Image 1 (tube, one colour):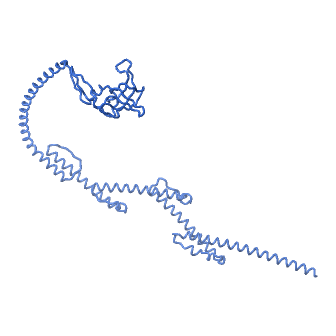
Image 2 (image 1 turned 45 degrees about the vertical axis):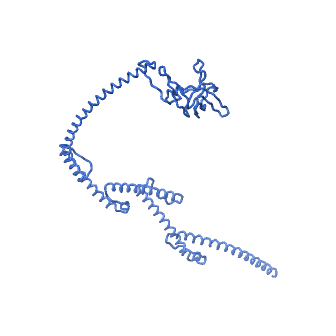
Image 3 (image 1 turned 60 degrees about the horizontal axis):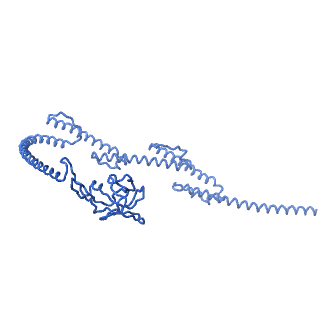
Length: 400
């Protein structure tokens, strides 16, 4: 009996220990569950807060952490049902907005009308909505351009219309004004044609005119034609005066002819003097002499010079021609001294053994500093080395 009691005591002790251990683990699990419950209620409240933003709902006030506390477990189903209803309403509103955007795209005749799925999916909704907005902006730009054109056209025909009249639903009234103005213009055109025909009849011309004008302007034109007939008689009188003037001019011409005859006699005398001068200069009577002028092309072609100094250090050349250089023009048995008027940047040619069979081209250069009796030359195109004594002259291609 004593052993049995000992065994029972041990068993009871073991059961008590096991119960204590189980109670500890159950308490720990309870704490984990309560922490998870608190996180869940916090997330639900934050979700409800996001759903309430700018939507007019008050889910967050009903789904507070206190209302969702585990001690209010009995009311949890009713509370969570409101969150489901809010989410369902949000989806319904999203779908309605997507359909509205689609209708807007169709209304503005967008090139690419998005599918409802493209507007409801998160990854494509923003891009699809932005594309519709772009199409709407294009539509608005086209509309504004049309309105601007209409306003400009109205201004041309004298109708006062503002852009707001066309934008604010008053287009019917605006187009009524335009039609009235166009009818008035058509009436003016018909009046112009009739009055133009009347003007034609005055001059005995049966014509049809289709240009636009006002009746008053046409009446002025008819009066102008009548005035033109009156001016005709005045012009005839002026014509008779002009005939008298012509007779006077004919007399003047006769006088001028006599003057020309006298001048011809003078010319003949001068020609005789020219022949005498040619004979004195030893020229043939048929020779045509054109004296050169200073700086003319012929005088520059006659220039002949020499390289008189070479400066290798600074790379320039000195020639014996300058501002005071003169060239000879032989006229008969006389020599005419001409200044070729040399200036900076004139192109020239350098050659060697001029007037001999061994003549050869040396270089091309230009005058960079023209002095009185000499000039500085800069060589730009050299085939051979330039030497002192080389000839310089102006070729025809240098003087182009």
